[in-house]
Amino acid sequence: MTNPPNPRQPVLPSDFVQIAYRVDDTEAMAKFLIDAFEMTVANRRGNGVIEMSDGSINLTLIPCNLRG
Image (cartoon, rainbow, N blue to C red; front, side, top):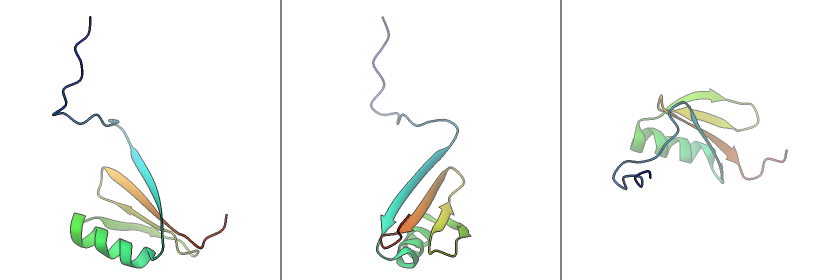
């Protein structure tokens, strides 16, 4: 029988976390993430997409008006 997970320890993948958000204003969101969480801009694409990282988590900010 296994023990249930400890609720005080977050369960996260150990290797790589990639999250994408659709946002109205990628520049404003990037500024917020830099100021609030000390993230850095890893890449800016020509279509307005901004990729950010804190070294553990990578966030991709996608403009709401971008059509794929």
